Length: 503
Image (cartoon, rainbow, N blue to C red):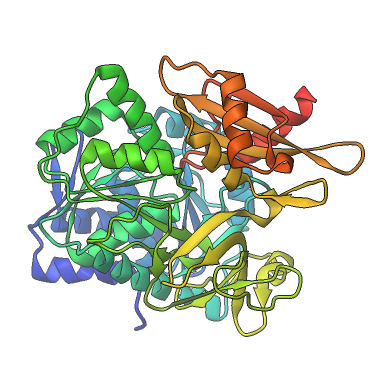
């Protein structure tokens, strides 16, 4: 049989079934054998409900062991797990269920009020899995057939930060490969404990946290969502050695530390700190490194590649926001967006990717798949970046987010970097607002540190010293908090709507 993600668990069921794997907020710990028993229960229920190979099983979830068991049980029966965050709106959940053509929908009802509310709308009934509920089986759902049936492990919806989400088909082999890459990149081992709050409904939580931990036999301190006070307790008292999350997590944590008057949190076992799933601001990076006294690692990845394609290296503390170096099995090149021709070292262009982790396509969307796939098996990511002579990658933004001002290209990341240098600004996001003459205004939204105020005159003077005139924001708008997805990505489409309404 070809490699499947449940084989990662099978290894530990043979070699170390009683080793602790998941540590929960109530003090309970689950061994590999305990997770195996939950997976047995989930598998038996899926088979009893006639879930077939190639069916999609939607899981409306916040992190819990039962969700992990469902992911692995789907792998056993050949179904595709499809996780969506329980904190999404009813209309979003309904749309995902329809897009996935889901045969069955599960809800982590006992551990999530949001999931329980969705379960009531679906007239869900109790599952054999503790605390879970499931919808009635959709008899008219069409199982996928052909080569994709056995190749695909999961369906992951893109975040839709700038457009309509698409269903990324993620392969068993791709996920298993990235589990190895991720574990090796941070020397993950059985004595490590990762703080597992990043949703397993996202490729970050699924690949980097769950499956990499399974590959390495490492432990997870699992939490349904992020709470800074709880994280500090876990760092101080529960042996957390690896902390990973989007930049938004660190921004919230730094705010909490400032509010509590904590200069450096107690974290005796912490040896690896990482951020991904979003652009990294240099000021934020420096503040995190100062708080923890060690490097903040960074990477570049995407759902379409089942994880990261570039990662910084252990033992290297860079003074910039590079996403590091290409990982085993991946290829990345910088291309001219208009012609597809490769760009010279140091030049900026669209990132094209191919390799072992690349998706076979978007689920039942041949048009969207054709729109991003290029000759030679390359995927056109829509991300803009540049590769330096040492192989380090710098991601500077999205092609669709690029602003055209007075005939010049404005990359939001450049403006955001300059804004991040100002004292008191915690995070920023820059968008374009169309004008009648076809130009675009540059609009900046900023989120301030607790208790800070923004001196507009000083801010503009600083920006004039750092940026060309055409890059200067027409407006700098202070917001209480930048809108983010449940995965921590800034939702620029909402900011663009806000900018249009204000105009």
